Length: 143
Image 1: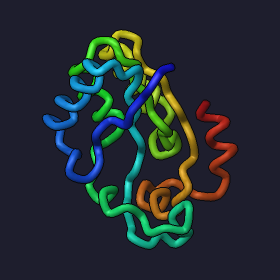
Image 2 (image 1 turned 90 degrees about the vertical axis):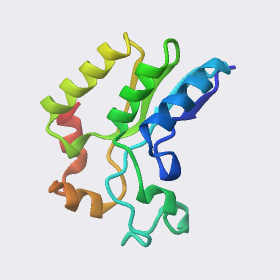
Image 3 (image 1 turned 30 degrees about the vertical axis):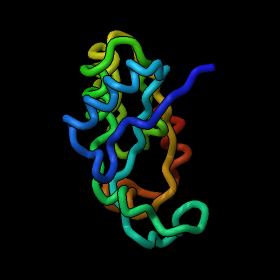
Image 4 (image 1 turned 135 degrees about the vertical axis):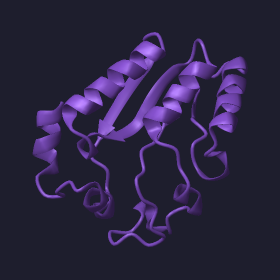
């Protein structure tokens, strides 16, 4: 069985030194993979509602960028796979995203697994200056 964990990147764990130390410890314990999530905003009551009908977790109010958190994890580990779960691909131009992912794959010596999605919160799209409408077709083009 392979077991993966979230990269410590939210709330009190949104500290690069803590993230590095925890990733090193997880790898030493036999963890197979480390995964980073993608958030731009953390409104307590998003207009569309948080999935599951619950309030948005307060810990999301403080967060590290997922690709930079994975870079920290890459530098603190040697073996574990590193992945995004999921990266909201439309918040950056495709070429810029491709460059960042390629760089991260090089830094990690080929350990990167990329999960790409659309996200669910309109407020994040608005904050990124990206239209909500047509996002499915734009994701297809991005891929």
